[in-house]
Amino acid sequence: MNIDEASKEMQVSKSTLRYWESAELIPKVAKNKSGYRVYSEKELNWIFYIKCLRKAGMPIGKLREFVNLYRSSSNKSKRKNLLIEQKNTLLKQKREVEKTLNYLSYKIDNFDTHMLNYENEKLAYKQKIKI
Image (cartoon, rainbow, N blue to C red; front, side, top):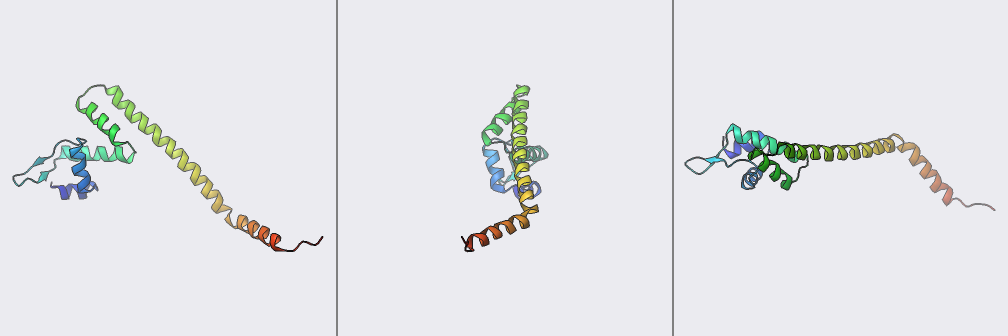
């Protein structure tokens, strides 16, 4: 599979695929006689994995650390801890998004009554008060 096909199938830009390869996040991709990259199932699996971790918000530095630990087959607990840390970060972000969604839902559900009160306050302010 060439880079164009891999890019479309994995929904990742060609420049991102080149970057991930140069950053050693995915294995070196073999090249054909013409010098074009030829992606195998192995590279596609790595692309899928890196894409998932990036979607999870894992920074490139931690990704490099994770991939290096994976390739060296050492320190499985450290790899697992990196995944746990990222999961906890995502859960915290999820809680914040849920709080924001709850607030927006409240504002939407009560929009008309809140706006009516605001308009009444404005009218009362503009009216002359007799003393």
